[in-house]
Image 1 (cartoon, rainbow, N blue to C red):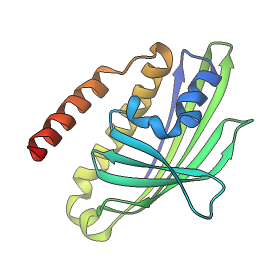
Image 2: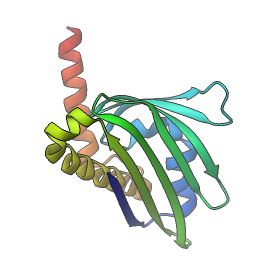
Image 3: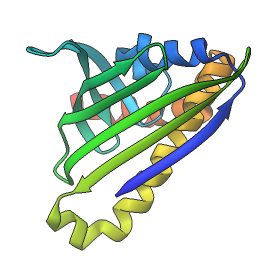
Length: 167
């Protein structure tokens, strides 16, 4: 399954790049699909990774490639939920003006056979919706420095549920 989305953001390309790459381990600060995240060192890699608790379960990512000059980032998931076989994402931040940029995300996900056959009709639209929401979350955060309403709602539900499990 491939998802491609481009979005215009009313913030400088440098601001967007800082949120997306410089603060890579902090996706939980802005993405409604990521409730907890942490940067991690990846043995044998020139790049870092991150672990995330997401709506699809816990995932680990490793950056494969970074082009800071052209503001491009590519990573793959190395520890993924059972519904997926593989996933990778390529992000690109393009300056439009001094205070405007576009963000493009190309996501490539291969669903595991059993979940794809039984639940693909449900998983694919949900995943597409979540990717689009994540981009809207990034836009809102880069433009305002604040979390989107979707992010606040997601965190509230996640931590309430987590608190109940721990109690």
